[in-house]
Amino acid sequence: MIFSQITAAPADPILGLTEAFKADPRTDKVNLGVGIYKDEAGQTPVLKSVKLAEAKLLEEEKTKSYLGIEGVALYNQAVQQLLFGKDSAIIAAGRAVTAQAPGGTGSLRVAAEFVLSNTDSKTIWISNPTWANHKNIFETAGLEIKEYSYYQAETHDLDFDAMMTDLQQASEGDLVLLHGCCHNPTGIDLNINQWQQVAKLCAEKGLVPLFDFAYQGFGTGIEEDAQGLRAVAAMVPELLVANSFSKNFGLYNERIGAVTLVAKDSECAARAFSQVKRTIRANYSNPPAHGAMIVSTILNDGELNALWQQELTEMRQRIASMRTLFVESLKAEGVDRDFSFISRQNGMFSFSGLNKEQVARLKDEFGVYIVGSGRISVAGMTKTNMPVICKAIAKVL
Ligand code: PMP
Image 1 (tube, helix red, strand yellow):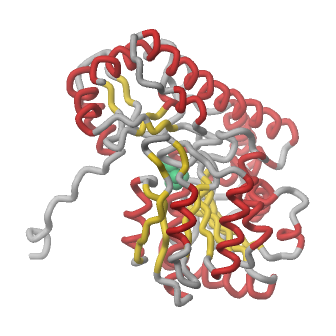
Image 2 (tube, protein in one colour):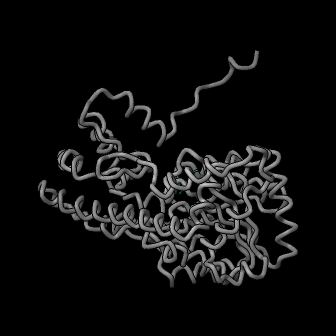
């Protein structure tokens, strides 16, 4: 017998919260834990552009035969254009290679395993704080994790000097995980000048950036949100990107993302790509087709692309309006603590500064679920649940 010695794993800090939320019998409960976009009615509907693409696929799809290891070619091409821009010199030179992968998580895992099995790099630097699953993914893959400073609690802002000081300690070949935009959990991103300084440091020290790009279009716009990645890519010879379409296409359960590698030249990229494919083959052989076919159909069709961009803009603007309403509603509830920093943050999340006890009281006494770190999913707020949320926060402060 081998199973009786197994100890139970702790509940996942984010998905475990959803399980607790589902089991809660209160009718006015609110889940602001997991990062899922909700519309004004509190629903997560399928985007219209996605429905139209699916109708087209249903009509035109001729086979369910296996995809190649790297997935749908037109999809991978479209991914590169979203990441680096249509006129990118990197794409033109054949320096970028892309493999479709199951979501941002699967892409990060493939990237980590590929690096570990094919290079001397063993260490990855991640921001403190970061998305809870990063540690889990990289540790399980076998990378050694080191942390760089990112957040200054007193100012609710980026501690850029501390970040740079910590990254100075990194050694040649170390990976540096960078959130492309909408940093999770803080919602605080680097400005273009800071991106260039990070790029310069990586280039000088021979560090290899690994971009986690899960929220393109949720910050300020599709092109604008890629400016950090593009600035870094312009200055370093090698990098990796793990991107996800879970959020910006609302394709959460289709598990669709991609891993992209940029090398110093096309020959080196092709050689490395053969090993990326080997990593994939050993994990899940080849990716599922549906999500990639949806994204590829939308991005390669003028009308569907325009509709998707409009829907993405609506999601981004609704979240931004919830940030403003949140700050105003807290004030209206008599909260004197300054929460205005929340309207300066980007993306789905706000790092509220609430402590563990306050987070626990929100859940136990008021049925308002947020992550233990104090991270709140603003994308889950609506005009309807806002009073419940703000009244509860006013009480626990
Ligand atoms: N990276 C970050 C920073 C995320 O927030 C998420 C999703 N919460 C992911 C990656 C993974 O997304 P996916 O669901 O596509 O695996």
